[in-house]
Length: 77
Image 1 (spheres, one colour):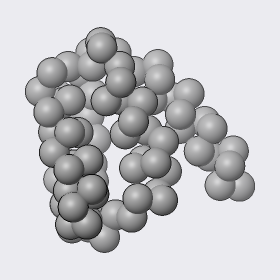
Image 2 (image 1 turned 135 degrees about the vertical axis):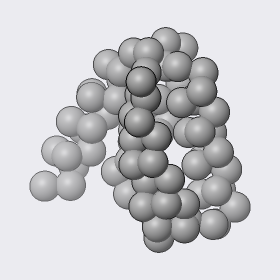
Image 3 (image 1 turned 90 degrees about the horizontal axis):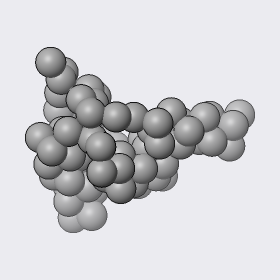
Image 4 (image 1 turned 90 degrees about the vertical axis):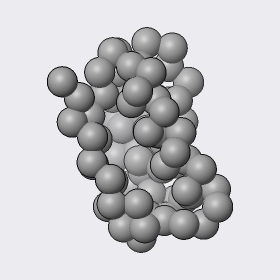
């Protein structure tokens, strides 16, 4: 279950390029698939849009400071 989903999410995120859209809710824990797997992949990827990467960095800072009530959506155009 969880391991397979995490592996597939990592593959999906590692293949992202350019504009990346995402929706982040509230109460996000560091152990969630997006936070633990997709976020690091997207932040490492040099082809991800700089604006999306800045929002992802903000999300990472919120998680690091234990402020998980983000409720942020970004639809890339």
